[in-house]
Length: 196
Image (cartoon, rainbow, N blue to C red; front, side, top):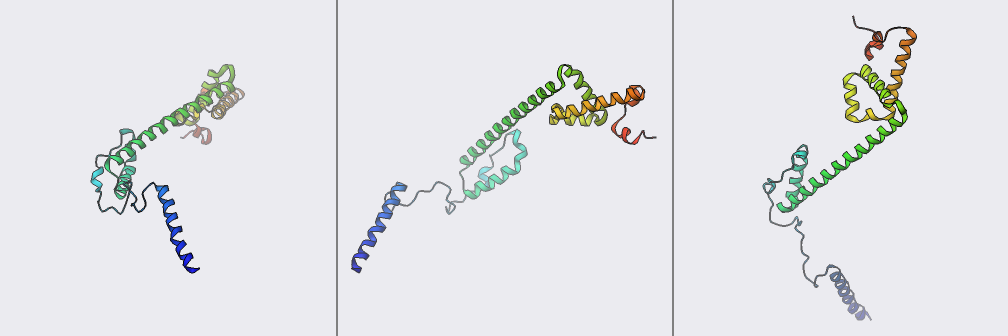
């Protein structure tokens, strides 16, 4: 009885080996082929092989990433041609991502502009001019530049806030009876008075 169990044991091992060989597609006993990423390979890859890897001008700011990639490629013993293809792929992906971001930003700014036009109504341009004047008077050129660069100058809430400020200033000047030129103050002057 013990002899039969020991005889059936090797048969199970052979079946398991056969199933494993069917999965890999290799004949039984044949060593696995490497994919070029075998780190136990005795052939050393020198980092100098990657000297020709360069980034396009628009990605020059990512130079540290390229240096790290070259080091990783050397550790993985990637062929120089494979490393070059990976850099080209990443460059293409980065360009597509940047284009996508520009398109999304343009869509957002257009949506904000449309919402602002709807909010301000028929006298859109005149009301917008009042809002821009308030932004310039209280924030100066730096604020105007910030609003333009970020696109927030098109946001309905920002335009509404500066438009209401301009209307409040107009009401204050008409109630006080002072001429408009007298109320032209910077934000600091409005808070602290004129410097002597």
